[in-house]
Length: 153
Length: 153
Image (cartoon, rainbow over the protein chains, first blue to last red):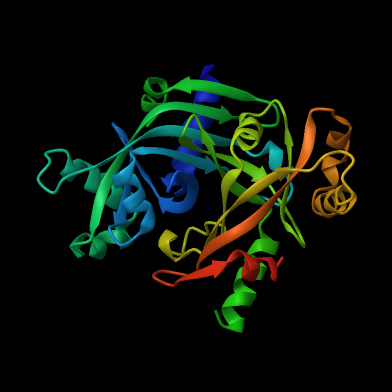
């Protein structure tokens, strides 16, 4: 991808705050909504052990995240920018040295989430991208490696 | 669910035009974006045989659709309404009697998509809901059967 496309993708990931998270549930796909933050190692999500998508990720770490430009009522929906990521979700233990930085990245984006860090059932997962497909507009699809995507986060 | 919640869910599905589509790709989840219309039998999507999610649905009909309220920059993201549907995607053959009604429902919502019905690689899929999970706001989750959801479409 050229520098203009790379910029568009980076801006999309910064402008949006929620992603569609695809997990495996009894072998079938399940899509839920998650707020996400960006960190050097991937996408940061903060989820409850009571939520089914958390159990899904613990049972099978293969996930997909999709982030799409806001619907604007004018653009044809197929012209909306979006990126689909496939990656691996890793639960970050409470004593992991990287936890502080990931928590800080999350709270910088979602300061209102601070109280949830006091709930024992919530934990941080880091989703490390393995590949991505960026659709910059109608018929404009580009594939990226996980490493290329990480450089934008 | 009470009548107020049912109305909220019906309004969400009418207000939004795109969904996150979860498919199985080599056994892992993959999430892409699809415009959708509503019909008596389920969710109507119009997809190209050249698109990977179409091949996914033909290989394994189990899919998930997630529709979320627009981010508004004010509401905490976990307060956004959203619904996750699990269902079965069925390609509608060109000679199927129900095709005309599904195409009409799709074009009523996306008149700009008319030219794509002239492309040989595009076809209509009907996604029949089997179950759904509606989150009406933070901590307000409700489960629905496919039959209950169909009554709202």
